[in-house]
Image (cartoon, rainbow, N blue to C red):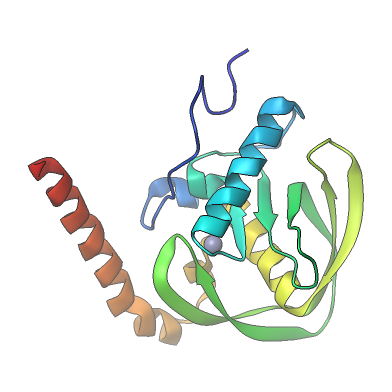
Length: 184
Ligand SMILES: [Zn+2]
């Protein structure tokens, strides 16, 4: 069987806005095999390389409902597959969020202050776990990625206007990167 990434392929790409795949809904993970485990491991490496708090599979062009995240209190991270938010607190909180797919953009986003998530581990076991504050924010941010909702979609018009120059800068840097590539 051909793996998730195709034969011998490694995840080494990070999709940057406005890549269309960032706006697509990912598919449920059905096969909990060695290949899935390898992919999640590579996602961890990529998250650490880019110093991210979380990393969702579609950010690497893998359209599957899974992500990895750092834990604030623990050394090791967490792999979350097929997540579903089953409880949401009434209270919300606002936190400055960044996203590896939007380099240099940090913006306050309102999130549920605590949530309970049902998900599967890399082995396919079902788990229910509560998350609060920063971690709850990360989980909600990553689940949005799985639904094709990058965090700028959550912004108020005012904040959209505020980050417009930053988005222009990202577009410019992608263009200059491409033209420098074609010159080689
Ligand atoms: Zn993100």
